[in-house]
Image 1: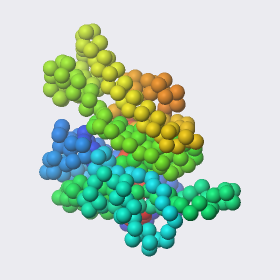
Image 2 (image 1 turned 135 degrees about the horizontal axis):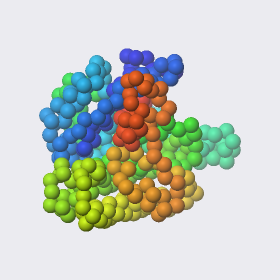
Image 3 (image 1 turned 120 degrees about the horizontal axis):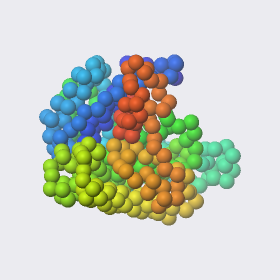
Image 4 (image 1 turned 180 degrees about the horizontal axis):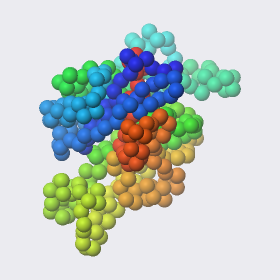
Length: 361
C-alpha cells in the first residue's frame, strides 16, 4: 500500500562528517527515489553525536534543502552512539496497560543513565510462538520479548532544536541501526536467517545483529574514519583537510609515504575487525544457537582499502556491501547511476529514514 503524499517524510541523516538527505515517493508502481543529496560539515561541528555548532549545521541543512528544491518540511532523523541504548529484554507477559505502567521500572535495570534523563520507547516483539508450527511447544512460556530504546533527553532536545532552527518539522526520531535495517529490508529479496549489519562512519562503528527481521543485538563503538585522519595528521604533520585528501587518494605520494599510509590503514582496519569479532563472540555466547550467515557493510568508511577482505578472512563469514538504492525505481535522467553506486554505502541511514511515514510505529 502506497503512503499518501501528505504523510511522506524527508529522511535526514545528520552525521559528524556530513548530512545526507533522501526523499522517496511511494506509488502504486513502486517506491521512486525523488531526491538524494549530501553536504559536508566542518570538523568538530558534531562530535560523538552531540551538536557543537548549531548554526553551522543548521546552515548546511538549509543549503541542502535549497539545492535540492525540497518543499516538504516534515522530516525524520535519527541518533546513535552513547546517547541511545537499544536493548532486547525478556519479561513476564502482561497486558498493554500494565506494560505501560511498569516498563519504566523494568527499564531501570538495563539502562546506565538516570531513568529521568531519558526518553523511553518500547515495542513488543513477535515471538517464535507466533508461528503456527511452533505453538504447541512454545505458547505457554509466560514471557515476552520487548525491544527497549532509551535516548538521552538533552541529545533529543538538541536535534529537535536544530530542526526547528532550520525551519523544519521533526515528526519522528529514529535510531541509526533501525534505519539501516529498513534499508536492508527494502534492498533484499529475503530477510530470513541471521545476519549482521556493520555501519562504519566517521566516528562510530555500529553493529546490528538481526534474526528473521528482528534485531537481537546492537552495539555502537567509537571507531571510524577519523582514526585514519588523525593517524595521517600525526604521521605526516599535516592539517585535517590535507589528511582527508590523502585518505581518499587525492594526493600523490612518494613510495615511503605510501608505505606509511598502508601501515596506517592496516593498523586501523585491524582495530575495526577486532571490535567486530568481539561483538560477534559476545553474540555467539549470548545466543549459542544462532550463527551469523552474512555481514553487510554500510557507512562512509566501509570502503577503506583492505577492510572488507580482512573482515571476511578473520570472521570466515561472507561480507557484502549493502546497496540501499537496489530496489528503488530510479530515473536515470535525474540521477547518475555511477554516482548513486559510489554513494550507496553512505546513503543507507537516509534512505531507511525516508521509508518512514507520519503515523507509523
